[in-house]
Length: 316
Image (cartoon, one colour):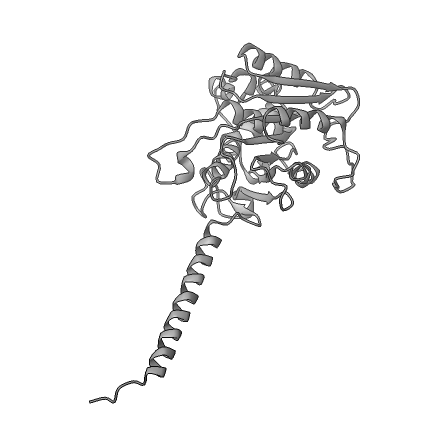
């Protein structure tokens, strides 16, 4: 027979067991917390190899979101997806990160979308899938990221304004039977801000072969092409929209803003329309090459948009 284990040794063994169990529990809790923590860096919208319509798995084929968070204690739970412009050929840096920093300074969590582009071989049939997925992705993770699923908006400039408008008119409620939890939720934005957004798709793109080919590819019939015209597809459920434009803009002319505003008016969708005299196309926040800072002198549209966001419950 083995000699009995001394009581002191039994106590030490028990202490070791308890401490080891507590350490394992702490590690498990930490792993769980990390698994549900909000991302801190750029992340893909689809798993590798599952991007619909993708031609590969390179960065150009991989739509991503980059998060920008308000300072501690400033976040109010609202969020917006930021879509830079660039004519679907590049992503204008000054219409991405600075916008996100400006929103974060107001308490809004911002996500800058890197969407697919024409030089990667993509057309609107694939590009317009990226914004709805971004909205769905944020909404599907809203609870774990401490965000309000009913206050997720979009803001886009020029080509990004077009994509914001498209997301506002072509959203779906989600597929409850999907194996992908992201696809089960709605892609409808709760508000939209269009910064000199391109709207005249039918008038400019469909009638100009040099625009139509890169936008849609070859052999697309008119009835299909018209599905990519935001003003033709506005519906009563389209979210409240803030539109701004400058008279000086000779690339995306004011008629774009008027056309979309008229479509919203006809569908009885709440909107605000602001027309400014000065400002070339692509003016962004009005910072030029200067970085964003809370004390920077911004274009007046930002002041009016801030009031709009307060009215929509995005700034508390």
